[in-house]
Image (cartoon, rainbow, N blue to C red; front, side, top):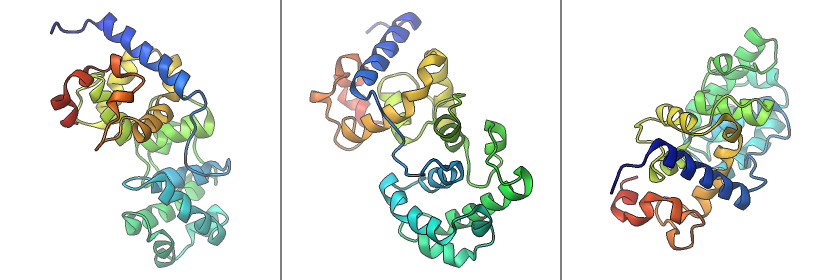
Length: 224
């Protein structure tokens, strides 16, 4: 099979985006944060290695117990751990939540910073979290949050062969015009949960199967 040209890949990528827009015209963040940017930071931080549904079960208790940043900054780690116990890595996440609140108070005047660089200084906040906060919280699109769904789908679509999420993000950013970056994470996450499911992909009913090289190559699909 001849190698896909750069222009052909771009044409296919734009076609994928258009179908995603048709299928998920109002894709939104599944994490509940009540328009509070700090709550969003903590929710995304907590979502690593667990489900959004699991996070949404513990955060109401967390905010009822610690309604303000200062409350969480002065919290007893053992008490926070107990609230977060139902989700994965709760000890590390409890420590990061408290340290994150402390840094926002001490270095940013109690306000969540509005830059990728400063956000990534916060404990427990990596590039994925920073991208989501910038996009969802501040309406500033500087990149694409690459979580497990986006990483896997990028490989299946042959939009990236990178071995890390950060490198995969750079491949996707180089492929898509910036005007397309905003909705990709939310749309691909929904697509990964509903159709391109890791262990049982619904290829036969997939609305982009004709645009997916892996649809014709089950062995390639199983490797990702």
